[in-house]
Length: 491
Image (cartoon, rainbow, N blue to C red; front, side):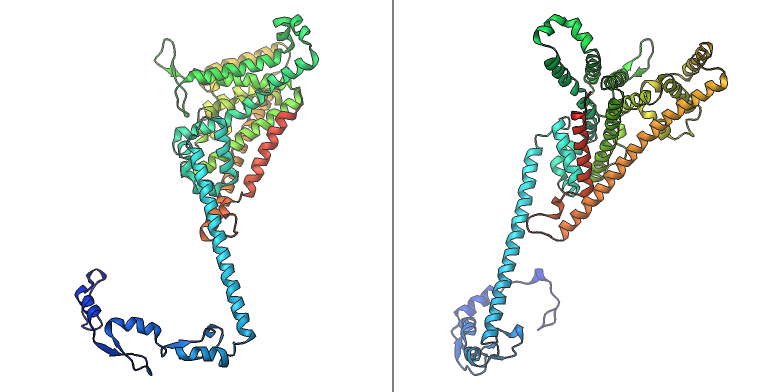
């Protein structure tokens, strides 16, 4: 509301009176200086300049904020500073020194904060330029993204746009998970050619190699060749699938029917299982089992951890890891290769038959985590009638051959086999659950650091969001320890 006419107005309605401004600029009429004691007559167009220069303007002492209460005319200020002010001697010099030091410190802090922000911007720019050519199917890009997500979740969440091509779409995220799932197994199998080359260079001379011939080399390295061949066949099955989709396998029509089935999935699962089994035999029993258990634990838990972080960052639904195409075949191969080394093969077969029959009999009442139905692959496609016939045949042959004395002993054997398989399934679920919990903990720690970086900069050379989280560093350390264990454990 206008203070003169009391009429309401808005900021948009205010207009500059250019005619009045021009008239005041050209006006030569004089007015008295508004400060008492001056008495000068000043043209209207020069009043502002005179106010700045007038010696009768009221001023405070320069040490007023430190306690000096003097207020006087501008012409008397110099006399006050030199003769009257209580801060004119050493105290004044001290105050001036404090002022200069405070100003210098403030300037230094601002400069360091600006340098820190520039470093963060430069770092994000470099990441953005590097991320333009990244591919969700490239192992090095996936490992780099996993390291960033696990160690620096706050920075990863703040700059998730630079990883957009790898994590925004369901198919690209599934490709990332597929690479994380197959990497540990192929890392183990990649050790075999190195061991073969080392063995040939130390134990067999070039002349001896020629004397052995191809058949002799096959007999010398039968387990290594079988494991590598199984891995290669599984890899060819994955490549032959050719859907280009990271979440589903191509389904082929079954001969003589209108039904389709993902045969490449089951072939890949069986050959990877066979490669893992032979690899354990080649490494000797206990070192091989230890390496298989470490691979099993690392694959499931680390993949689940990274998947949880990506789900939280993107706000997507949970369980995306279980929907990628490599999850069933890798977990199938690792579970059952661990099972057949945990108990006799006959008991493992009985456990599979028993749990499959239980699953078909009480599908609605049985927890899916108890049977891990999504990872059963070929076992889930077999009819319950075939399991019943197979179970009866196995029991009859054992009683006939004297392996078991009566039906009670046979039932006990069946129950023990089912317990072993249930333990492996529970262990798998426990690994997945622990990976989820670890990923959630890492994400919360990163979110806390990210919130701190939004509120304030705590140090001059590093933003809080750029500090790695302790849980993430521990997870990466265990991953590196696992890789070292694979490389160094002897056969």
